[in-house]
Amino acid sequence: MGYAGGTSANPTYYNIGDYSETVQVDFDPSLVSYDRLLDAFWNSHDPTADSYSTQYRSAIFYADEKQHEAALASKAKWEAELGSPILTAIEPVGTFYVAEDYHQKYYLQSNYTLKAELIAAYPDFKDFMNSTASARLNGYLGGFGDKEVLKTQVVKLGLSESAQKKLIQATEYGLSAACPVPVK
Image 1 (tube, rainbow, N blue to C red):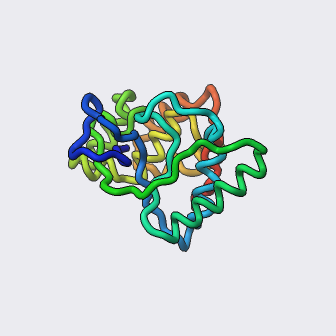
Image 2 (cartoon, rainbow, N blue to C red):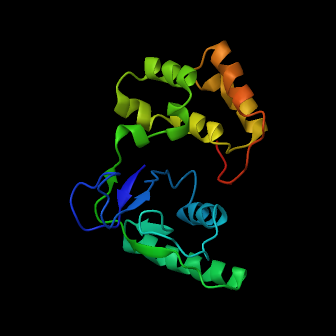
């Protein structure tokens, strides 16, 4: 979680200026293509809806010209498919500022039992924030993912048996496959 797309230095949640809240996705192109990530992005929200603020707008921030061209082509494809203009901004990333610690892994930070177990495994907050386990737990606690995948992954997340049960209980109300990018 962080901020991009603005012009001033060092934005914060309470002094965001002209920045947008965003996530930075680090990915291995041998495992998932940029085009596949773009499809997941378009699929996860209504890109034809007008944003009510710069802070919460729909945007793709590209890192290089190759990503820029792919984002534009993907936007054109989805516009044709949806039959409506897409209002998502496509802009160079510029500087990405990592958001404050309390904004990281929002759902996980609200679950003290699971957070405590991961903090024990990753005592340096930066390691906690960047761990795959915390990203997956945060997604599941936010209601996203596949229940069958969770059942196979839960033992690989480094949680105690008790915490594994708490995670499964926390997702009993269902999960939404909002991010259809497969996990290997």
